[in-house]
Amino acid sequence: MAEKKKKDTEEVIDSKKLAAMEARIEGLNEQLEEAKAEVAKAADAKADYLRLMAEFDTFRRRTAEEKQALRESASADTIKGLLPILDDCEIALDALEKSTDAQAAKEGTRMIFDKLSAYLKGKGLERIQAKGADFDTELHEAVTTFPAPSEELKGKVIDVVQTGYTLGGKVLRYAKVVVGA
Image (cartoon, rainbow, N blue to C red; front, side, top):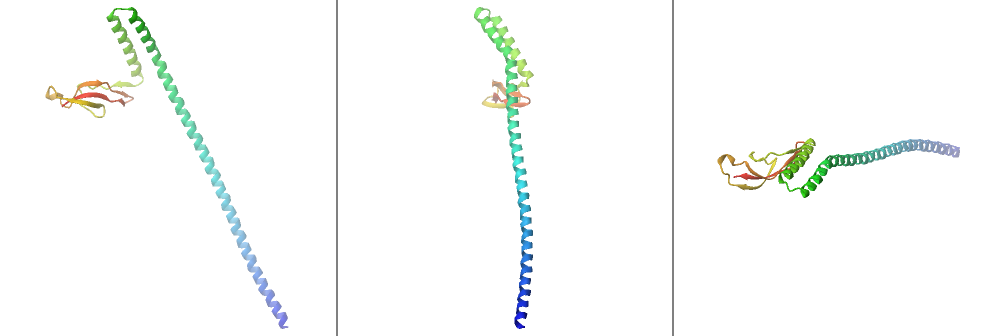
């Protein structure tokens, strides 16, 4: 009888161990399923990230191509607008070679200059009016100072060495000036 009691006790212990092991296995299976779900979420996130990176790369490339096409188009339009002026220069050179009239040469050159100025003004180019104006570091670059002939010319632009220009309100080239001291 003692042996039967011992065997029953071992079976109870084994069944408790078995139940504990089954519970542990069930817990591990739940953890495994949670880990699989997390891996699937991470894989989805990685796929989304790669898709977004590919879309951004495509956007960046397309934008760069559009900017380049815009630059080329703007350059072509500018050059196309300058072609008639180039034609006028050729005509003026031919006329200068055949003519001895200085007044005609001056008038032809003035017409070409006016035509070029009008074209560039139409594109937004403006001369910086500097002579006699107060010296302004936003528009002028002082190449030298010169003793002012009168008191009211101190701090003012006495002479312009190189004309400055703005394009669309932004300084394209500063006016190089002589300033009265």
